[in-house]
Length: 182
Image 1 (cartoon, helix red, strand yellow):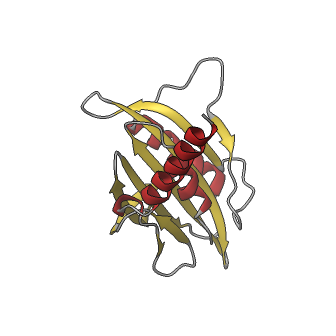
Image 2 (cartoon, rainbow, N blue to C red):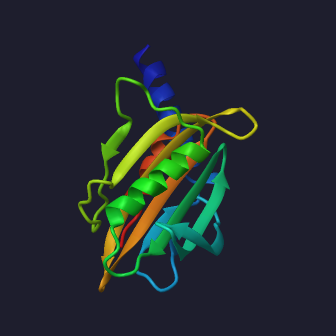
């Protein structure tokens, strides 16, 4: 019986090792133009830059994202003008993201956890949220998102990372969040 358990354990170890090498989990480093911010994504990302209104001011947001298995991952960043309230903009960004994902917060508990990646500023609005939402077509979606800010010369750069998936996202999201760095 002991040999069967060891054989099963060995088989599972090989399966886990092979799954880490699958094309869906081919982690690579991505960077953003004009900044030192870097992220790790498990698939070849698409890139775009678009003007978005944050705090009533149009700002250029860089976005990288890809699909891996049952999940969509994205990392976004935007440089704020000097003397801009980063906390207020992070809070607004969180509200917009949760509203778009149709997340309904639990009544008696907060899904918000303080989040601060290495090199990120210790802001009150730097949080990680794990919640259930709904896609536009009504299907359920798990959302795991983090928002933070990094100093960049005389201004601050906001960073947002998110995973949308049809199932559990813990390992995928943890690797994404841990791979963010200024």
